[in-house]
Length: 280
Image 1 (tube, helix red, strand yellow):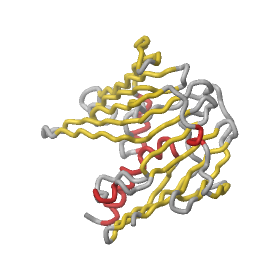
Image 2 (cartoon, helix red, strand yellow):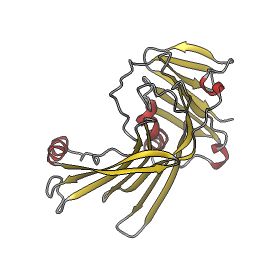
Image 3 (cartoon, one colour):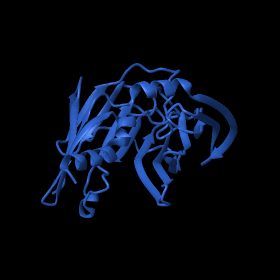
């Protein structure tokens, strides 16, 4: 396998979650003589929430599952524990995730790979991205809060991927029909959630398809907690993707989790910065 393609494959697998929520825009990974090293470059980190949600603490594991059956009958079943999340009663947020989750990482190295830790202090107006190798906390000023903004749930974008042709993709986008239905309310882990079903149909011929293509997503969201608890999307082209929160705990997390460790040096960043690791 060409080195460039191999690296791109690993970067895609490693930083899919970061591009959605944590702002990683690129990465570089090398494997040589049993040593794994990688560097991710960040812009301003992106928030799970862009408004302060006080009085509703929780901790949970955000999990994504993907299943697909190929035309030859091959079944694909993937599960990724993408992040550990915490929120305290003041509305501060902490996320922990493996910086590298590439499928070809050596088994012997996977347990040694450090977690990328980010702390979002919406009260003070700063985010902190911890670099465990250099013991640096990259501090970035957060944008103003908005009471109207709502997060897009991971893995639940209502629109299917664009085609390779920009013109065809734009025309297809304009031709799609969107239907939204309420699913009522349901208790999920003891939290009242409102359900919504969104069906996006690409009509016959819009992308060379000989019949309509419909992508359907169900979102279960707690308005009170400003939190997406469950999201399920089915697409005839890509299969089924489910995002859920496991090990949900509504009790107050340890306050230490939202503080920069004393051994770290805080550095203010106003542009791109990099975080990396290297296994022994």
